[in-house]
Image (spheres, rainbow, N blue to C red):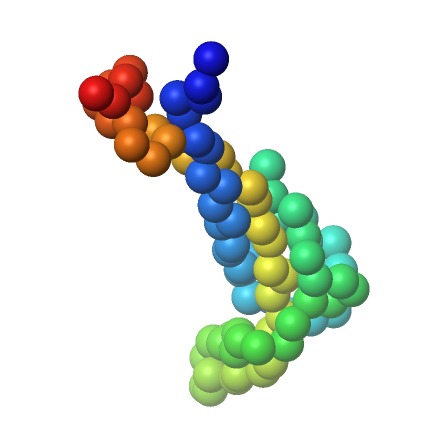
Amino acid sequence: QMKKQCHQKLLIQMKTECVPCSLNLETKCPAGYTRITNGTGIPNCRKYLETKTHTLSFVGCRHHCVKDFEHPECCQGRWGPDCMGK
């Protein structure tokens, strides 16, 4: 019995919202995602704060999250909805 479906594994990456770094310790990834950054995350974004007179800008932090996703596909040489082949 040959396997008709060969699942292709995809790694989906996303970043959490940019927040002040001091608040980012508690940031969780969305359900199903795993956090791959530690502590306050990566300080690679800017956060803007509007006041009545100015716009303040400061460095914010984000976490990177990953999720494994299995994408079902037919094995080589097979095709169609049932992955039958010839």
